[in-house]
Amino acid sequence: MRADDENTESTSTGNTKSTSTGNIEHAADIDVLVLGGAGVDTIVYVPELPLPYADSYMIDGGIRARAGQTGDFVALGLAALGLRTHHLDFLGDDPEGDLVRALHRDKGIALTAVPQPAGTKRAVNLVGPDGRRLSLYDNSRGRPDDRFPEDTLRTLAAASRHAHVSITHPCAGALSVLREAGAGISTDLHNWDGENPYHEAFAYEADVVFVSVAALTDPETTMRRIAGRGRAEAVVATAGAKGAYLLTDGELTHVPAAVPPGPVIDSNGAGDAFASAFLFGRLAGEPPHRCAEYGALAGAYACTVPATESAALSRDALLARAAAAGG
Image 1 (cartoon, helix red, strand yellow):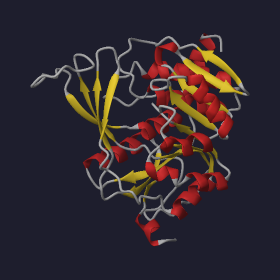
Image 2 (image 1 turned 30 degrees about the vertical axis):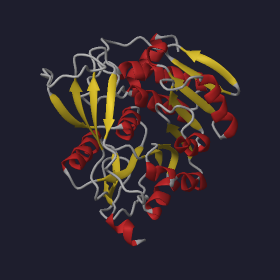
Image 3 (image 1 turned 135 degrees about the horizontal axis):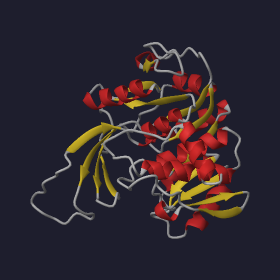
Image 4 (image 1 turned 90 degrees about the horizontal axis):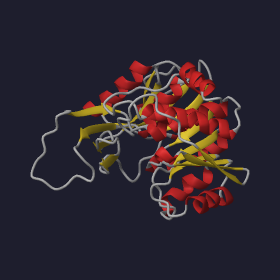
């Protein structure tokens, strides 16, 4: 074991036994290893977006910090669907890191935390009355030379059926290790514009690629380029209330949005919920279109959950809603 591995902090919260040195003992295989995307969001409900300039605003709903960025919410969704999930990322020895650790402990999600002297990742999310959000990410919570400890990464990857990779910097260096281990790979490019070269390593190395249409001028062209240049067996472009688009085996189909089971409060986490449910279907052997239908149902549910809370659709609830929808 390398010296930096000895500083890895692991918790035994459900799926994988681990020690304080990061020496993982596998009680069972991991269904999905989630890499990156751990952090804390501060939620601010604002009267409108974009927010007009003013000297000050009174925030009646309060300003609240809660654990949960993209990797956390994917892990939460997977675990709620009954998949054995392990999350690997950098965390600081700070109050924000404690919030992330507590979330995983409370939800029974195994977590391996690599010490991050720069601190736990943070963001401020401004949320409008219609549920739309504007996220402000703190880019200072990382270092250019951050890398996951190789022994820890290889051990976890070797025990995993699949890895879902956030597009944070350390995850780019993990892609080759995951591929060598034989794990399936998925990633979420979020609001990629289809041009920024940073995202290409993730887009072309993953077997399943999720992307939002928000910044794409021609979603179909971008989706076909991802499939043509990379390894993707399925490319999904999410479009909010307009549903999603699925490209598989060269065929592009539209997946209608599911009807939310309650009032739409907040779109935070909807894309992560979609990805979790899609992967649940994929690992269960369902065809891609059924996986996307699962994703739409989970994403619709997520829109009814306030951003200040952490909740995900359970396996039984997902299957019941799929059955009710005729799936």
